[in-house]
Length: 81
Image 1 (tube, rainbow, N blue to C red):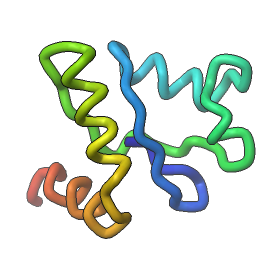
Image 2 (image 1 turned 90 degrees about the horizontal axis):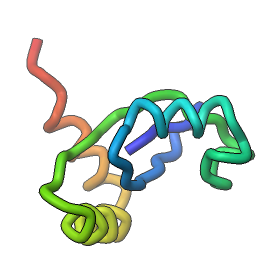
Image 3 (image 1 turned 180 degrees about the horizontal axis):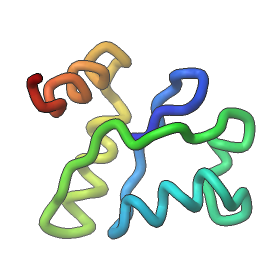
């Protein structure tokens, strides 16, 4: 999940999260249309899945979550101080 400069959340799948994040940030032709009006700021959450099918199903499930549940996912994945 990527957070934008204005705080919106974007969910997608990729085999290389860092490469894809940089595409979203630096290359409008390769990055998602979502980021054309609101720049990508940081990767805030990621999960690893065993295959593309599982990743697509999990992506769809996360996209259906309300914002507060997405924020809870992000918070629960942060290491405790």
